[in-house]
Amino acid sequence: MTDKKIILTGDRPTGKLHIGHWVGSLQNRVNLQNSGEYENFIMIADKQALTDNARDPEKIRRSLTEVALDYLAVGLDPAKSTIFVQSQIPALSELTEYYLNLVSLGRLQRNPTVKTEIQQKNFGESIPAGFLIYPVSQAADITAFKASVVPVGDDQEPMLEQAREIVRSFNNIYGEVLVEPEGYFPPKGMGRIPGLDGVKMSKSLNNAIYLSDDSDTLAKKVKSMFTDPEHINIDDPGHVEGNMVFTYLDIFDDDKEKVAELKAQYQHGGLGDMKIKRYLIDVLEGKLAPVRERRNEYAQNMDFVMNMLKEGSEKANAVATQTVQEVRHAMGVDYFGKF
Ligand code: ATP
Ligand code: MG
Image (cartoon, rainbow, N blue to C red; front, side, top):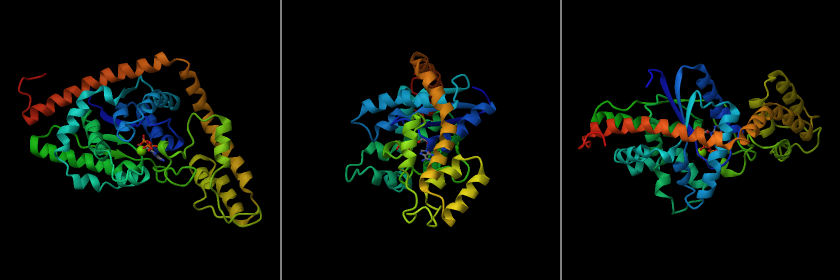
């Protein structure tokens, strides 16, 4: 192992990645990767995806390669980052089991992100037990690689807090083995990008613009976007707050002066929704076209993609196995030495 700081982060293969992932997490990762200052582990969290998709394994399997293509398209590079698949690393399950004993059911039920997700997913009384405990399995993912830096969106803050509590508790009881992680969050306003409907953009909520959307799909989605219901005629004064078109321009248009000008015009009246949407389509197309092209190129070479995941998983497995051996030793359950 190097003495570089270690990064662990990842995504659930529940669909293709969207522009919220891009600004909320992927761009940070690519910058950190290219700085050369870190050892990078990037995990496709298929086991976590199964916690709320157990009856649809085909979706997870299909999405695994979609997410891998999205990674390559935005500039994650297997020569600089270890890209791997969660389920192929058995040590992660073992760590999860040990950590579960350090966490109370009440603490898990209070996690605000999990609470929101439970409501959105309409589980009712039938919350899968694996879903409720997924923050513990995330703590296993992070600590297995001794990661100290975790680049994620704002919704993951409670997971980081949970992981830190587990680390402190473990080290207290069994000795200093685990490393306490820090979240690395995107710039203000980019950590929880709203979807076309105004709630958090999510793969699972059908409200996303995907990195892989073609030009027509992109244009159609922007045209369907929620603006200001009181802006009926072009000459009516309009609201820019809560208006998704302006929210996206704030995030994606580098020409801030132009955005300020358009906002003033919209608020004053005289700027039509269709015109401003066409402008947004151009801005997004400018950013997404190169990503889409790179993605299409990699999609021609799926052997390369699968091999990247296989080699990454082998490397990650060696690191996590080493940690679990240290953990067993600290807990005194290494009766037969390394096993
Ligand atoms: P799902 O609906 O299956 O949970 P998701 O869209 O929430 O999918 P995840 O795989 O759960 O995506 O999240 C991957 C990473 O992307 C996390 O770091 C998360 O914080 C970040 N992220 C997810 N959605 C957004 C968003 N809308 N804005 C900014 N960051 C996001
Ligand atoms: Mg999510």
